[in-house]
Length: 269
Image 1 (cartoon, rainbow, N blue to C red):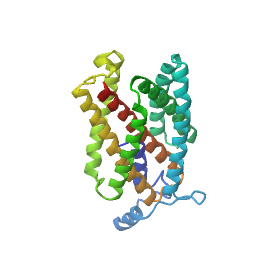
Image 2: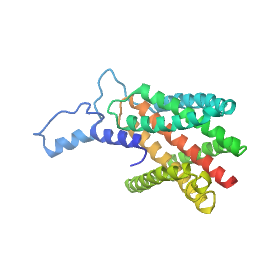
Image 3: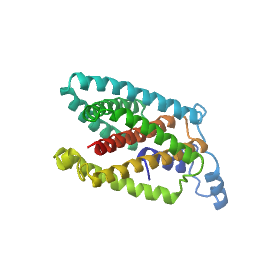
Image 4: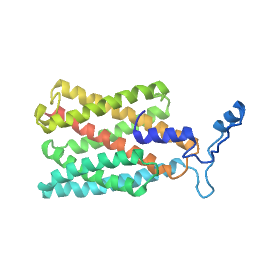
């Protein structure tokens, strides 16, 4: 288990991508069944297979939406501080709800994915403005750090220094579930003013340790994402899955950026 979006794609890869070409064959021998499982999925004639370029182009489009809406949200929060909380919490709640819908909805909905990017941009822009107001220079530093980590993780995965095995996936899955539960509880604590608004650990050594752990978790999730995209391309997924894969990658990169902001803020405190 990793990013729920990529978990879904991995599960559907094992089932043959939404049942394409699968038929009920109760009388086949074990050898024939094995041949069926080993064969690439059958995709309808009107659909072509997924390529890496498909995923990258969709990811760039979604990143463009996040950045464009984020810029508007940034300036709106600066010029009208009263709108900052609306954009911040509206975007946060909207992305949480839509993220669950996209992850578990059987059909891939491009409008929902694009709407998610819009809401994510509103949230990220308002959050970035608040951090930049409190910690001058935090946003450029977080952007640069995110790009560096992204490049390093891709190079490490591509070069074989980071190997994504079943054991690695299980360990990351347990860590992600545990951190997700903690993050929800910590958000409630932060809203109540615990730790100076940071939640458990505050901005002291424990808080910095928590942020370092979360940043590392987000970084290694990128390796899982790269591997899942590669598996989807190699196993012959339909082209429409490029939207889902691009969405999942954008979610992880934005998460990494937010954790970078939090880490910088805690260090600056």
